[in-house]
Structure formats: C-alpha cells, structure tokens
Amino acid sequence: MFSFFKKKTAPAPAPHADASVPSHPETATPVTVPAVVPPEAEQAAGSWWKSTTAAVAKLVGAAAEPADLAIEAPAAALSPGALALKPAASAGFVPSRQSWMDKLRNGLRKTGSSIAQVFTGTQIDDSLYEELEAALLMADAGVRATEFLLLDLKRRVKEAKATDPARVKGLLAEALAELLAPLEQPLVVGQFQPTVMMVVGVNGAGKTTSIGKLTRHLADAERTVLLAAADTFRAAAREQLTVWADRNRVEIVSQEGGDPAAVAFDAVTAGKARGRDVVIADTAGRLPTQLHLMQELRKIKRVIAKADAGAPHEVLLVVDGNTGQNALAQVKAFDEALGLTGLIVTKLDGTAKGGVLAAISLWARERSARDPALRPVPVYFIGVGEKLEDLQTFSASEFAQALLA
Image (cartoon, rainbow, N blue to C red; front, side):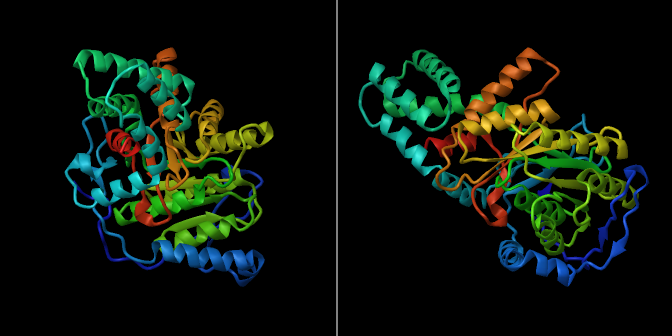
C-alpha cells in the first residue's frame, strides 16, 4: 500500500501517435511523430491555445505530493496486478485529507448553512421537519430523495429517543451517509491489460480537465497511460488534451478532424501493442436529448469493443455539480445509452448544492432493485476546484459531514 501521489523521477517525454483517418478502423496503424504541437495547430487555436497552455501549466506544473489518495493491494476477487483506488482516510493515510475536507466544506458552505439553520432551535416537532424538507429541496436533493431521508430520519430519531436538535442533525448525517454508501466504490486499474476508459458528458462539464488530472495521478502512481483525443468536434479540444499529455509525459493518439471512433480504435490497439496499463478516450460533449449525437457515442463504444473484446471496461460520465436535478437526468440518459460504470462530479466549489448525489444514489438503489444484475453506478471522484489535488476519491461519510457542516 502506498500513496497515490507517490513522487517519482519524470521520464523523458513520450512520443505522440498521430493517426491518419482510416476507412476501416480494424486496419489503422498509428504513426509516431515528434511530441510537439505543429505551429499551424497553435495558430489555428489562436489565443485559446496560449491561455489553455498557461492555465494547464499552472495546474500541473508544481509537484503535488499530498497523501490524499491510496492504491491498495488487490482483493481476492481481483486479478493479480490489479489496484484499487480509494480515499486515503479509509486506507490509513490521514495527514492531508483534512485540507481536502476543508475545501469540500467550503465548496458546500451555502447548502450546509441552510441546513444547519434548521437545527438552531430547541424543539423537535413538525415545524423542524418542514423546514428540513424545504432545505433539502433547496439543496437539489429532489422530492423522492428528500422524502426518503425524512422517513429514515424520523425512524432513527424514534429509535434513538433523541430530543436534542444537534443529535438529530447527527442522525441526519448518518442517514445521508448510509444512502450515499453504494456510490463509494474504488476504481480498479490493472484487472485488464490495458484498462480502457471511455469518458463522456455534456459540453462544459470538465471532461478533458478531469482526464488530465486523473492521468497525472495515474502517472505519479507509476501506471502507464495512453490518451485518445476522440473529441474531434470541439475547437482546440485535441490541443487541450495534448497539453495534458505533454505535462504528464504520457502518449496520445490523435488526428485532426478525423472520425472519433477511428481515433479510439487506434488508441486501444496501440495501448495493447505497447503494453500500457490504461487507455483513456476523451469524447465530444453530447446533450442526451440529441439522439443522433448519442448514436455517435454508441458507435465509439462498439468500435472500442472491436479493438479489445470486453472494452471499454469503464464508461465514466463527468457531471457538473452545479446543474442540480439536471445532473440526474444526464445520468439516466447516458446510462440508458451506454451503460455507465462510474461518475466524476466536478465543480463542487461555490454555487453547487450537492444534494443531487442523494437523488442519484436513490435512483441507483432502485435501479439495482429492479435488476439485481446492475450494480449501483459509483461516484469515483469529486472535484472542488482547479488544482490537481482538488480531484479526489468520493467518500460517503466525508461528503455527508461536509454537506451538513
């Protein structure tokens, strides 16, 4: 067991593979080119390229070494060499997790203050529960999750014979943590060679930035990573991911204006041939209401499976924590289209209310109840800011404490 942020000597920059557009992805072969963005690409990206380069350099330029995450030895159910990423607090690494908790509480401060006001009185009566109901709804928990939490809280209060509002607040934290518990699962890397991750989401959710941060964490943990710039639609998306690849000293497969499914195929094929641990495919932002665009994501998933049977092993949805109940709608739509395996919730650093995770967890619980073969869709990571260390593994108890602080 060792720190996920284990510092190591940086190797020489890896070459980039720039694949030409194949008419048949099964026969595509990446071509190695220098790991330098051509001048014409920089010129085409314009000022956006310069500002993005400066921003990313600021994010990942300094060595980050807080012991906030841990990689744990595989359980018996995992294959040899597999590693599970989990919160360091649960693995015995405590020191820097406190600073992370401070950031999380600060990000959810508005919601926490609204809920805390409910428990400033001296009586536990219908008025308290009505105020709590309103506060949970304002926190974007949604009607059904709010009803679930209130019923569970009343049961706990009765069983504990609690008469102090502060005690009731503690029972609410326990109820929320228990509701969120199914979302707390480790991301396993190494059970497959390579572990192929397909990252999806709507525009602006933070997909590419989250991929960059996750790549840095994996690289620092001595996992070899290959990136696929399969977002060939958004202007300068390829260049943005290239910046992260250069900073993290990992390889990238890309092509300008090509077919995204072909890029993903080339990357998975290259990852297998080169013995990489992880292949991460960035995809274009898609609104779930645009069915023809969702079909393109399905195509990418099918083509990845042609390159590696059983892949993608992870289909990760990046969700903006500021979108409220719309986040739940996105989870449902992308899960129906692609079969999600995990979530990354970003931007819990100001206006985000956070209660939507309760709604997502209740949906996941009911989904598994309808079909026992479907496990809950876990929240692998949550983000509270722009720095590298601001993307951390999700802990149900930590989140409940921060939300109700």
